[in-house]
Length: 345
Image (cartoon, rainbow, N blue to C red; front, top):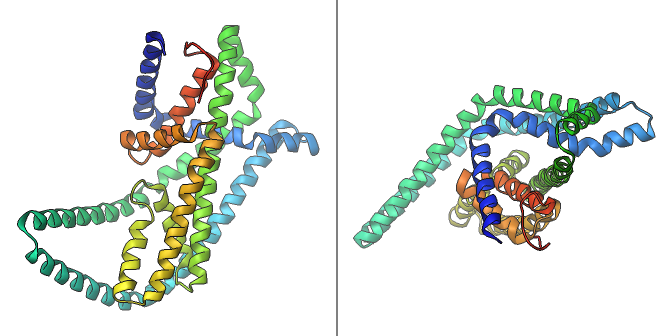
């Protein structure tokens, strides 16, 4: 690591930070379209080779099949969850009464404990209680924000699929245009970086999708085996929470388990604890291994990029961090970042 290399890396990190912070918002559907095009490319080639489809038709079929598959999954999920929510609505008065009883009991216990604690510990306990209240307020506010963001999400989805189709259909023309405006040596570096970055990002997206589907499936199957109501809705909620750093599905599991240990059945609480521990262990064991393998990064680099990204950008950093690591590795491997030796991680 020479001073020249460190200077390149520092400038690159600054450019990545500014790009992700201020530019990504405006180019996100096109970036997602390029990634999706790379993921669908093997299917397009197979359609062209085996069924003799022309490339524009193969691209259209691949995108339409993906849209149809996602639509079927979403339709089934919405139908099942709607059924479960209808059932929940019927039991809502019963659940509301039980919730009020538990909250009153918890407040009474918390008040008794806080009165017996020394002043510093009582103050710390009150601070933690206030933070929990703030967290719950943020969650409630966020639920409304999700509903308000649906039109923007729909627009993002449409532009992503259109971008993917156009990139697949005119891949050769786009590649030829880029070759015509770049020097030969720079184009060679660009091709190496393109394959490493886009391939790594596509692998990362594929790995995250596998992890989310895997954890959701395990949660739904486990809850169904325990004859739990609203298993699909809860499985989807737990999968969404699983994306969030630190909080994760424990936001649901921990109070749920505590409730059954104290007020419900200890046996059911033990099964919930086993399911929660199993899902958490499974994800922790697979995540670094699978994501690192798909991205071509060492597991330690993957872990550092996930943590650093989350600290710098918040929840989106769980995606931004690995993306930055993939980009830097690609530039290092291609020689765009000058360095001595051939070592890489």
